[in-house]
Image 1 (cartoon, rainbow, N blue to C red):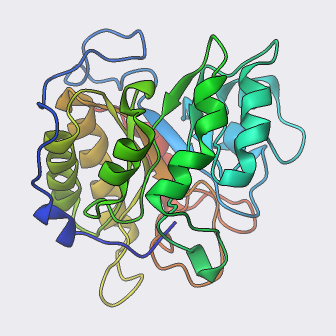
Image 2: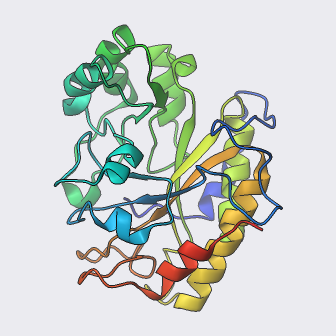
Length: 286
């Protein structure tokens, strides 16, 4: 989570790899257009204070993430299977290495979450060079069955990722790239993803945080506008040829004044459906 917003993102034009249309990594048929979303496209992000049972209540997401390797609480078999662990910070690396080398390694693992930004002034930050050093144990012992998603920055325009890849020599280690985007205009999301793909075009992209945030005045996007944003985003992503997964933020309502997700939660603080829940359940990408 962070306050970084588009459209300043659209200034990103540097090319480091050729942009190409990529095969999907979810073992589904051709994306988009046919009235149903690709099997793994619709995910959901949970924030602090979530209840693991909320994944089952939402019911329409293929996978879910939160900011850690484990699950808080006792999850159903479906929720356990759908969880994708995140090695969010340097302090998670040792446990991540143990997890991927266990008898039950995860299929996917996300790596460093916004190391360039201290959320609410509390989350730890790392320079690209510090992150390159911190990830060395995982590079040395990645297990045999897990695919890894590249670190995600709060500011995709910064030089953090190029410096990290140069320092670690590990760009080829990752199977997908990762990006966060907040803007009330879905067209800016499309442009931002397309620009990111023009820079990092050799792997699929996971959009692991997205919402119609950053409105002025804050939190002024209506539920109807958020629904239209959601519908168009998932349809476009399914047809894009390079966006593999879109994790809607947030599954749960959070406090603390985070205006990026104040009008995008699927379940409110009392665990009741927001007006967006049915919209999320009904998204078909058609």
